[in-house]
Length: 170
Image (cartoon, rainbow, N blue to C red; front, side, top):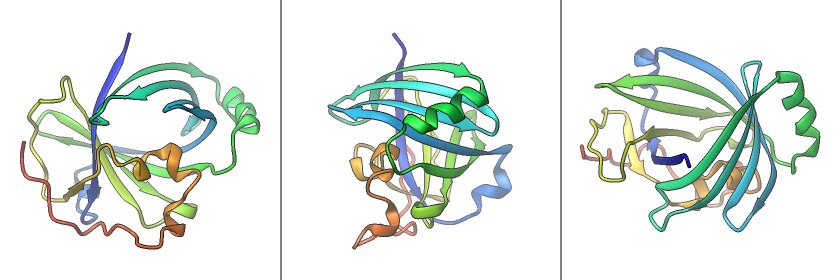
C-alpha cells in the first residue's frame, strides 16, 4: 500500500520561481468524491494520470494513494466523466535542501491562490522552510483540490491571504 504523507502551505511571494527546476501545466478533474475518497484524472502537460485516494488521517497529512499513468487521449476522454469544476494550475518543482516542494499557482476560478506541498517520509520528518513559505493549511479541507473544484477560491467570502506569517523550520 502506498501512503502519501504531505504538508501544505500558502505561499507568501513569487520568489520560489527563481529557485524552480521545472514547471508543468496541470489540468485535473474529479470523477467521484465520497467519504473522503476521490478518483481523479489529471493531464500533466500531455501525460495522463489516474489517481485514487483514500480517506485522510486525523491530521490530514497521510492518506492511501494509487496512481496509474494513462495516455493523454484517455485522460481527455475521462474528463467527460468528471464532475464540474476542473482545476487548472501551473506546478513549479522547487528543490530546497534535498527536498522537493511542489508549488501550485492556480488559474481560472482559483486564480490568486498559490500553495506549496512537500511530501515526507513520516509525519514528524524535519525540513527546511524556505522564506517564501507561509501559513500551514495541512488538514484544512478548503484547500483540498477536490474541494476547490466545488468551492473555488474566487467564491470565498473571506479569502485567505498568501502573505501570512512564514512557517517556522521544523
